[in-house]
Image (cartoon, rainbow, N blue to C red; front, side, top):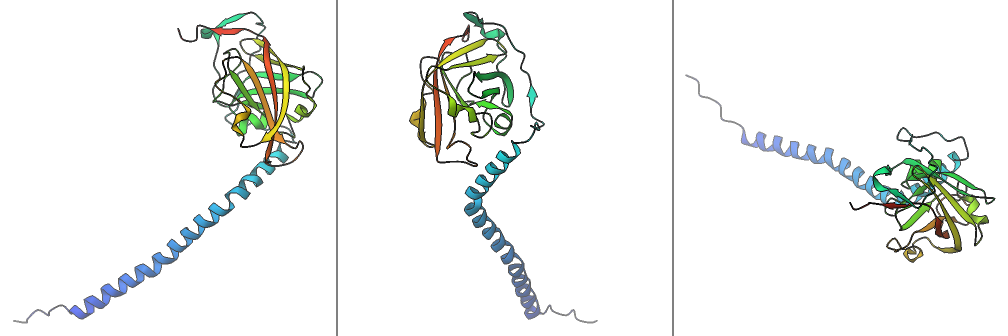
Length: 233
């Protein structure tokens, strides 16, 4: 009867060592590539952001091409009364048009959207979702691009009337002042104000492409339009 051969322990050790070396040889380049990609991405993000912004500015000079998320739910209202019931207000969702904004003889006449992302600013002006829509008695913070829909803000003067027409009522605001401030200056608006006020802003200087270090602000106080009642009932 033949004896079974004992396994060659040296051969097994050499094989295991070879496999470990092969694994390290294959994984090291992958890990290095991922690390380099992360570093390059972190360094280039600010430049890519500016490039994207500039690219979108150029696209906005052409006929608007709406995103698949765009849906026009704006149905004009003739309500210019004192109040409107909250249950009659179809509060807009993000990227939805709920009104128009106009300043006579100043070159501002645009769709008004809820939200200030790509779709609203690509197609008009947008109300910051952390602020309020007209009628709630609070701050309405609206932004738009300086070389398209809000380019006309450079012509606005104190005393001008801003008209906002929504799906539940029509509003007017009188301009009280304009201001140029740093882009990161958070004191330029107060979202906790206890009176209805409109703050419109855009990049400054006007007609300059891409993100800039300053913003141009236009401030206005409400002079007419229905107040939304029954909000907390």
